[in-house]
Image (cartoon, rainbow, N blue to C red; front, side):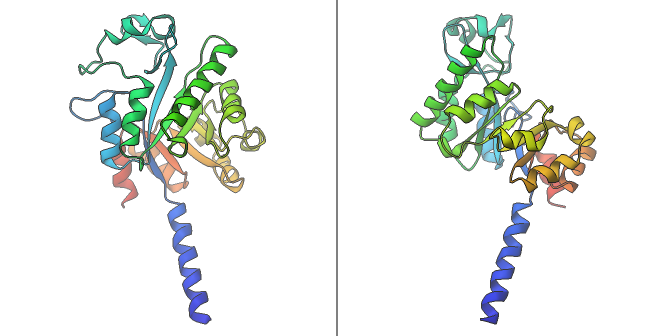
Length: 253
């Protein structure tokens, strides 16, 4: 019995230690490599090959209702949400790749689900359009059987609320805007806060408060060594970064 208790304590301690490990989310994919750019299919594949916990991407709806992976509001000289897909698709990314659709991204995501897809739903011009976008994204993720492999973030509270309302049980939704307390986010049904490094350094108490509520803490976009180390020391759950290799190096120290 004593040996069993000792083993149980050791297992609990090791699992707790693992749970405290900060993990890496590649900001718009791992694009800081040769022949890759942000929000490209190659950036997602690079993040998967690197072993990142997650690869973040931005989703906008075109004028004719196609969900595309692009930060926006512009793609080359065109406003993404006011332009048809064919026109946008004809404008290559900086590395020569085509502008990817969410559908294409999900196909690539399914090839290696050890790396979660972190979908940021961008603000759209009306609440009804945002609701449609949310529903269409959720339906597409379900169609590709990736419900447990995709997490969601948004700046607009309405988008987060609609994800909670229409999403499946257990959906992971984090708020980006940095204006709500952890307690308020919890009451809204969100599962995490995902705030800018400047906000978190002003409110470091929100880290432990969130985790005590069973919520995750992600900090963005953290690229320099000093701020990365601060996040690690604070035991945040995730660091969103354009510099995954530096985060990995510091985590290994």
